[in-house]
Amino acid sequence: MTLRAVQIQQYNEPYHVSDVPVPQPKPHQVLVQIKAAGLCHTDLMALNNEFNTPLPFIGSHELAGLVAEVGVDVTGFQKGDRVGCINFDSVCGKCADRKAGLLIYCEAPSMKGITTDGFWAEYMVADARFIVKLPDNMGFKVAAPLMCAGISIYGSIVRAGVPKGGSIGIVGIGGLGHIGTQVAKCMEYAVAAIDIKPSALNAVASYPHSPDALILATDPVEDSRQKIDQMVSSNYRGLDATVLATDHPAAFELAAALTRKHGTMVLLGQPEKGLPCRTTRLSTRISSLLGLWWRIRLRLRS
Ligand SMILES: [Zn+2]
Ligand SMILES: [Zn+2]
Image 1 (cartoon, protein in one colour):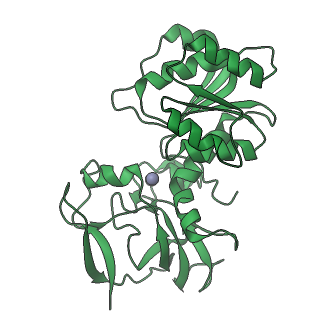
Image 2: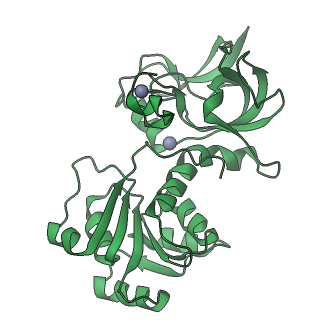
């Protein structure tokens, strides 16, 4: 039996639609009939051979679909369940975090669509530890991108640890950031959207859960701080936390300037050449600088 899948057969070449064998679920896996699978910036990195992925491989690490078959050791899922899956294929089983039960902090994981076959296929197996049931009213196309972009930005906002009613700035209104401003609003924060493109700010301003302030990165910093003054009432000027959902190095300096004294910055973007920032800005203002990368906590169910 074969199924159709979208494969990368050569790096930096167009994708191929191929017939591949239907995978059989191992005891800890489920077979999922895929209804939607996302395309993420990381897929382009995989196509460009940034992860040394053995060829050929099937792309995508954002899944939503129906459970078609359940491995013998799997509990809590049955055929027909609507599920989503994050980008983990498996973990090494050896590192300290594995022993502590923190699977997603594994330092040598196998990743769907990144180091092994992903979800651009009619069917694919998924480790039951990394799937979650979807709410009945959530469409598959909505659910799939939440499995990477969604939980990454949500995890960052949660990790910032700002009490309800506080303020959050989302820096970089792209694939993650545009979800982040909406999620932060729904979490009852005062939200500033920060980007260099007016079109990105206008887009999030048009959503039902729109940010309280729109900050154009090219505006003078003092003007932006005044906008934030109008949005928050606090003893300190600036945002309680900023989440960097961009890898543009200049965004870091701006975010530090807009974060309040004793505030928190959460790094989600991965600037290739590191982060330039005046250390005085950090040492005198920011109390927490949290890295996230892909080692997000599993906050899938919430
Ligand atoms: Zn992704
Ligand atoms: Zn490990």
